[in-house]
Image (tube, rainbow, N blue to C red; front, side, top):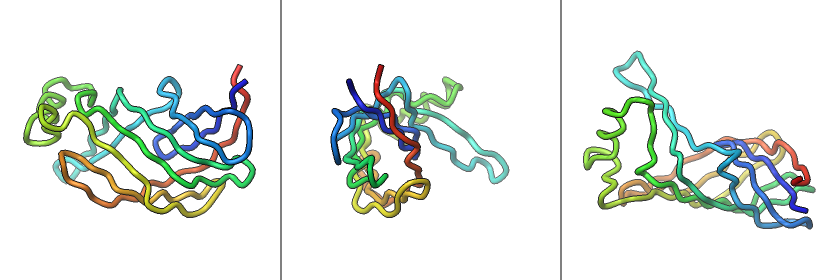
Length: 144
């Protein structure tokens, strides 16, 4: 049997062998990587990335996370408007021809349970910037 742990910063469902602190893999069937950005001062544009993978180290007993790492295929961007998606894939934004994936690597994690802050480096088209993701440990369950 596998154990599942749910962490919501981008809603990650992870699998690992039972035990103490363990490594978990992101389950793409039950997870999403999404974004929302301001557009033209009054609007927000939302989208998702459909192709991603990652892992984390977590302790279900203390409901804490010690590391998170993820890779996201920039070609999989989806805003539900193909013309916008093509523009996002161009050299103006993600430059998928030269940078087919972005990555996130945690540098510090604070909190536990319903209040987790994951500090890390997000690398998009060759540029790395610090970001903070908010999340919550939502529980665990045995995988059927």
